[in-house]
Amino acid sequence: AEKRPPKKKKIHQILYCAQHRSFAMAGRALDVVVFGSTGFTGRLIAQYFATTVARQHPALKWGLAGRSAERLNALKAALGCDAAVLVGDTNDQKSIDNVVSSAKVVLSAAGPFSKFGTPVVDACVRLGTDYVDITGEVPWVKRMINRYGQLAIQNKVTLVSLCGFDSIPSDIGTFLAVEEIRKRFNENTKLVRTHAVLKGSFSGGTVASMLEMEAAGDGDAMRNPILLGSLADNVRPGEEDYSTYEYCEEKKAWMAPFMMAFINTRVVRRSSMLLAAQGHSYGPDFVYQERALVDKESVAQKLAKPLPPPEVRKRMIAAGILPKPGEGPSQQERDKAYFKYYIDGYSESGRRVTVTVEGGDPGYTETAKMVAESALLLLHNRKTAGAVGFSTPAVAFGRALSDRLTECGIRFQVLPEAQAKL
Image: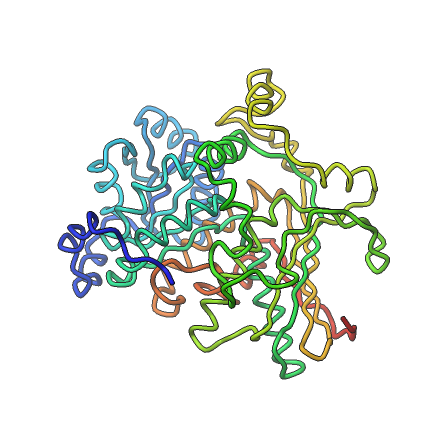
């Protein structure tokens, strides 16, 4: 069960009255604020708003937010947009409250979230502002659920973390596979197994987030397959993280541990738990697994090895081998990047449905689309979004998000009927 907020937070309950939420939201100056918009991924999100979103939603009022007015104004000038500029520093809660209270939805791209994210969530929950982010820091998300979950429900606030490459393709793809199994076979789903193929690199912010999680002592939590909840109280057979490598005859490729699986699997299992509570269970014995798919055994062997120790990675950053915060892949590198997920769902009788999800540069270009479109769905379709509180992409948005992203070039496809036994 999710814990209630600690007693010291109860004073926040008098600062916002849930029954006046609609009135308060109607009077807000901005529809969406992009917080952390001068970071590497934040700039790409801001660019997407300034071009695609502004063209499709000309009446939308949005803002750029972060710590430095100078950098924000420079970004606004470079984008040639009419976005509002709001300054908020996570070391100054009042300034964050001012940013959050100006918007109906806050989109946060300011990581590491375990270092910078909590004041933004705190303000959203207290002030009744809906929220999406691009974090992959699952232990931090768990702390936010424990600390603010009940108050978010009380104040009718919807918060949807993990709205980027981690974990929308996995979460929404699984949702579609389960939906198709029910439609084709009228059965529950027993197993969904995702095989991920991708080419891309990472930013300094991603490296920093991983180091921050380890510095915070989150190692054990990161290794818990059901950290965000599951249908069972204990890890069930098949839910353990995949840690070896082997050749897959059916796929004609090597299976190996997938670096995003320790994030994505936790989110899919939380979705299955939340949907079951709403009466939309994937199935009582549902299990989700995720693996990388590569063409060479040597690559599979490398993926099965543990990461270098934090001290070694810090030296690699200092030496320029790994990117620093604010740095990331170039436009040319992002143009060559891609991903494709093969999501195989199996019914209770062993019949199979396959969903594919594919797009371009996963971690940055496509993440910007994913989180921006999630924010817009939360803004425009709030009455039909999933339950309030800490939700997931599948629960909050479901098929509406896959339809929207497919229009944006991230293709979700249910393949023609196939028969396969477990």
